[in-house]
Every structure is written in C-alpha cells, then in structure tokens.
Length: 251
Image (cartoon, rainbow, N blue to C red; front, side):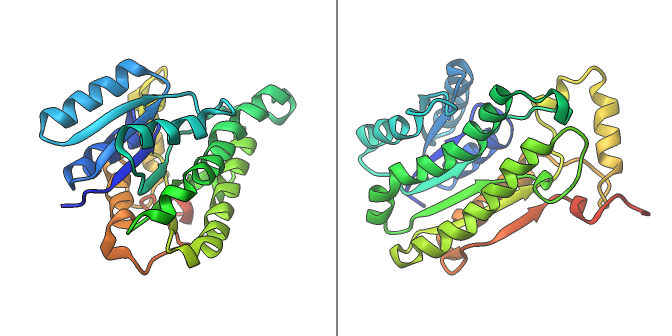
C-alpha cells in the first residue's frame, strides 16, 4: 500500500472527490482542499469510515495566500507532502464583450495561479519525497473552441503549458508533473442545469464514444499517473474524453 500524503484540491465533489476516494483506497493519506467545509467533512467521513486516511483543509484557492497556507497546514498535520492533484477550477461562460476584469482575474486565480503557487510552496517537501508527483487537471476546452469559454480555455491551455515546463525544470529533482485533460464529465455543474437530462444527452452526443464521462473515469487516470509504477512518465498531457477532442461523431 502507498503511504504517501496527497493534496487534492476541489475535493468536495466531482472529479476531486472521486480522486480522493481512489487514492485513499490505494493507501495514500489524503488532504482534501476546498471551500465548502461540510462537503469536505462528508468525504473525509466516507473515506475514514471505509478504513482510509483523510483530513480536511478548507481553503479558497482563489485567495493569494491560500496555496502556501494549505501546504503549511498539511505539513503541520502530517509532516510530509508527496503528491499534489490540482483539480480545483472556476468555470464561467460569458461573451467576450461581457467578461469583466474581476471575472478574468477570478478564473485565472483559481485555475492557474493557485496550481503554480501550490507547487512552488510545496517544493521543499516534494524534493524530500521518495516519489513526488504533481497531476494537473485541465479540460478539453484547452484545445477546442466553444462559445463563451475563451478565458476558461485560456487558463486551461496555460495549465498544460505549465505542466510541460514544470516537468522539464523539476526533473532533476525527480518530481514528475503530468496532466489529465477531461472531456465533459457529469458533475454538479451539469446537474444544476435547468434540464440536466437534456444537457447530459446533448453532451453525450458530442462524444465519439457515445456518453458523457463520469468522475471515476478521470480519477482512474489520476491514479495511473500518481502510481509509483509510472515513475518514468512526466510532462505528458493525456486526453480522457471519449474522443471529444476529435470532434463530434459523423462530422
């Protein structure tokens, strides 16, 4: 069993929750980071109730000091930090003409600035780890056009660029950095739609393999990259999207 300590951001629901549950199942001690304490506590209770190890670190990663505070809290609680899963995201759909400076800064703060400075703050601990790994969670929006998601796609494209550059720079420290690029995944965002069943149907029709993704689909690939058996894999950006980046079926 893997005894490393992992930080997973956006861990209160969706992909982050699924990744936290799976990594805990594999033996990792998981620090769940997110804004909603009650959701984090519920996931922690589920993990510990199944014999896993987990604890909550409430934080709003859009705040400038949050990344370093998260690292400090994890090191104080466990004394080590080996794995980071940068999953937290802010998603806003607006036409270019309506996007404000505050909107832009908010999306960049959570989707790009926070992952960068979380890794920076954790560097001493990662360098001391026997098997350090960073996994960033991007989006098909990084490489595809979709109306009103210019800024979100820009942030995710930059996250992928950051992945490759960090992988190269940190390779001498044996710190692996990789990225998962999900397609449409059934999360709270889609379930909150006016007609969630129709949204799922429409999104599934855009995917060559014929269905919307589940959080577990992405969590499994996060684990594959975190696994010590992937110790010769770094700098990769892997699409886990049912073929979404290939374009809609029949087009």
